[in-house]
Every structure is written in C-alpha cells, then in structure tokens.
Image (cartoon, rainbow, N blue to C red; front, top):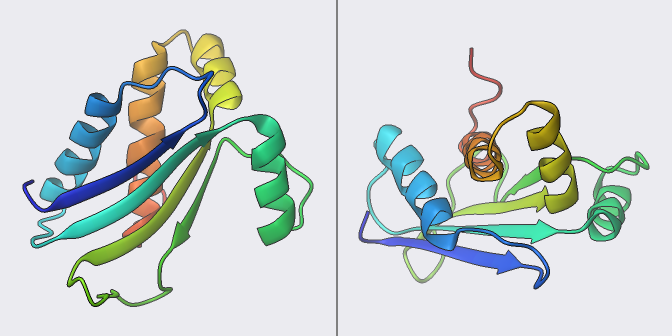
Length: 129
C-alpha cells in the first residue's frame, strides 16, 4: 500500500525486522479493503515500560504481551493530514520472545501474529475465529 505510514519505535536492545512489520501491516490493511492514507504506530518495549503503560491505562498490575489503543473509539478518525489514524500498538518484546519459545515458533512469526492481532483490534475486529 502506497499511502501507508507505520511509525515504528523499537527499544535499541531489541531486534525487529522493520520491513517485515510494514509488510504485515500492508497485508492486513489490504485484506480489510482499506484505501487511502493510513497511519499506525507500533512500539516494541520492555516489560517495565509495558507494566507502566498497563498500570496507567488498565490499572491491572499485569504485563501484557500486547496492548492496542484505537485513536478513536467507535468511529474512523481523519486528521488534517487526511490520513486515517488507526491508533497505537504496544508489544512487550520479552513476552513475545518467551511466547515464541513456549510455542516453538520463530520470533519473526510471533511478531507477525501480534502485529496482525493488534491491528485487527484497532480496526474493531476482536478475536476472529
């Protein structure tokens, strides 16, 4: 997708294939037949930062593998740039490493799954079968 902006933040000690993340986002956006400029923010953080975010927004004291925060609940949002701002996806890198190990899968495959999962949540699609 030509008009896709994926704002990636990766803490320096984590290894994330940025091209692959962008490709997953592009595929999911295409699969959902979304056209026009789209923007999404994806952050890979450590457990301390994830707990801080979780405490601030959910107040549950947990370290989640992923959190997603839609830009606007219940409706599409268009900012002055005319881009559809989907929201933020935050992924705990240490948790995804642990889950990949437990499931005996490649780390990149786990990243793909979590990015897709978070993006679907931002699009209002929750836990598809």
